[in-house]
Amino acid sequence: MQITVPYASLKSIMAYEFYTNSQKTWTAMFQAIENARSSVYLETYIFLDDLHKFDFLRLFQKKAEQGVRVRIVLDAFGSRELPKKSVEELKASGVEVFFYSQLLHRIHRKILIIDDNTAFIGGVNFHEVARTWNDLTILIRGVLVKSILRSFAKVYVECGGRDPLILKENKKLILDKARNWLVEHFPENKSATLKKVYKKALSKAESHVILVTPYLMPRRWFVRALHQAVLRGVRVDVLVPKVSNHIWGDSIGAFFMHRLALLGVNFYLEPEMNHAKGMLIDDSEGLVGSNNLDFFSFDLNSEVCVFLRDPEAVQRLAEIIVGWQKKAELFNPDTYKPKFIDYIISPLVRILSRIF
Image (cartoon, rainbow, N blue to C red; front, side, top):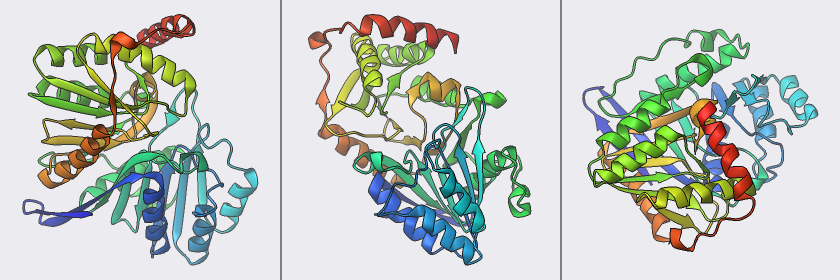
């Protein structure tokens, strides 16, 4: 379903489309790359050469050989299993490939930009493990793509990229927040904006907040913000998968769910793995992006999100999230029984969440 929204003040048309799982996202991305005429820019955390139905590596080579400028930025840790041979084949075809590597800091952002006029942002990586996962990606056409392009340019230049057409986009973002805007988060550059966005959203919520995350390891300030919202009479719901792809993460998440549920936060356990990251505030504002609700995303990882205020886009996002919620099971803190491992992990998590 495509949502097209007129922007009279911007004299432009913004179009949004949501994809709710990995395969739908890969299909849309694959088609968009195939149709690219001038440029393809990818920035992602995990990119592996094991998606046989979606052979992005060969597609990138094909487009580069056709004369399309293909520029790729990968996180050195997240994409560490990408074979060296695959990287060499990409470069031999004319694709620029860069790896972001900094101690502790990761590029966790997921951005794909086609021909400077179409962009994808969300939580989907490129690896076979994620094939059956639910997830959330937003496709954007219109003026907001310019901001996304400038955001990509920052990381591209930092990694050593020298394409003059991208270099000229490495400028400070000037964002119109009347409707929707881009949220950039670069903790290593002291420009960590996610904390401000979440604190403000939770503090001004009047009736209902819904959060979606695959992993739960919140900072103390986030716990306080959730509790304060509950004390004001705001209903706070959090959707998490009942079983994720990280066993340790599930144990840590259960510990925090129990703690927060006793404070009045409602947790919904989804029957399927859901890697989506999103937020709804009073059914009037929304957030879609790459960040999890853990201290890695808030304090270490570079992330990117789109903050939505457009009524139609927010309505569609609400339909997706509420649809997931209806299939989920409400967590009962009274039935939670701490495991032996919780007594080992939980103190360590508390320490880490105070350090960062």
